[in-house]
Length: 502
Ligand SMILES: Cc1ncc(COP(=O)(O)O)c(C=O)c1O
Image (cartoon, rainbow, N blue to C red; front, side, top):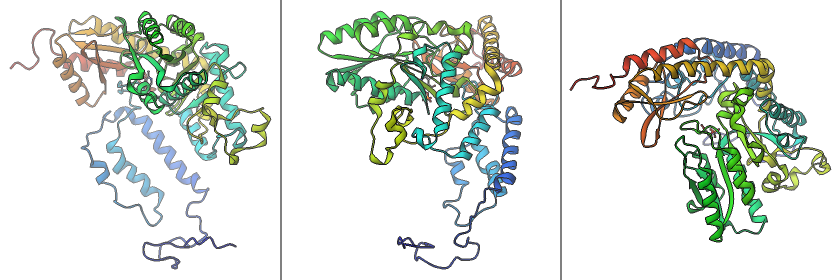
């Protein structure tokens, strides 16, 4: 065999020494596939027990910065360690620093939902360990993804052209941020191909758009002055007339409007930009319309909640995150395009080492051309497991339960003179404040979270400090929302006057 010049047993100060005591002899497999059976059973038991008990953990950890890192050795182990020890350190070292996103008392940000079938889908994906960068590198990885994303077009009532049977298609990205970046790059390339210069291009989104929009624009090479912030109406949705005025003004100034991003379910307040009017402006003016429905998109599985999708057929691209509200654990973003060739032309770069007969035949989809990285995990498995294990009707029931819990809490807040809504309650998000003002609201949020029974987050709406409560946890039920209400009732000071007299 050819000697590649690689030391057999490299050490810091020498090479080629004989294995020392406790070291694996050359050729030994330290971990055998069969260990998955024994160690895997213990790991699965650990996860099952964790999820059964997750409601009993304080939702947020009580650790200082650096505390977890200090519990870990400064160097990686030189010798193999038994799996039981690794698992024991999970409890001893890692768990004290965990924020329990799966806790039924987690109401912060947006949910990052998970469920047993999704966890098992991840497990199988890890076991197969395939890289589906090309159809040829694992045909089932690509084809299952295409079919599952087509199923979702149907289940969510999305336009047919988003399906692989039409002009477009869907692909799983890691996150909504990546979907936005891909949309910006595709729009940029389309405008450049139409003769515009990069510095002429302008991108539009409302002041309530997610921060992944300016970030994506920055990554795609846009300067800050190329981004236009469209004002919002009283309900925090984009003002489409203001968009039209800005686009006209830019065109009149010799600039090249390129893309508008509309949000269906904004992060701060779950506001819905009016897709039909925004889409009409985009169509008339030749802008790419990307719709970011990261959180709210899952709601469309319930036909009665599809109103926000009116006008969606005008979108060039659309994204939502099953990892937020459709039980499919992070990461899983479904990104759809109306015209797949626009995306592929923007993102395809083909070196010799990726050429293959299937690609050349033109008969296959190579998802590497639909995303920024080359390699890709088999994420469709977990989505497939979830869709099959729950069925559309199980998923609808799950979401409707959250909506009922949210409505019940909204009623309690509305009936209590201490609280005021800062935005209209929408889907599973409540944005409220204490009538006493920012200081009282901030103190209330602090006290709620300090209980460590619940975790909520905040935003600022129309200049007002606002508590956000998002009800979407897999294990969140009536008892947990009742407990949240009990805490709110106990910790909120009276409407007039202070809880702690000075
Ligand atoms: C509307 C919206 N868009 C984008 C994102 C970013 O999502 P991701 O973490 O998948 O990039 C979020 C996150 O909450 C969001 O609410």
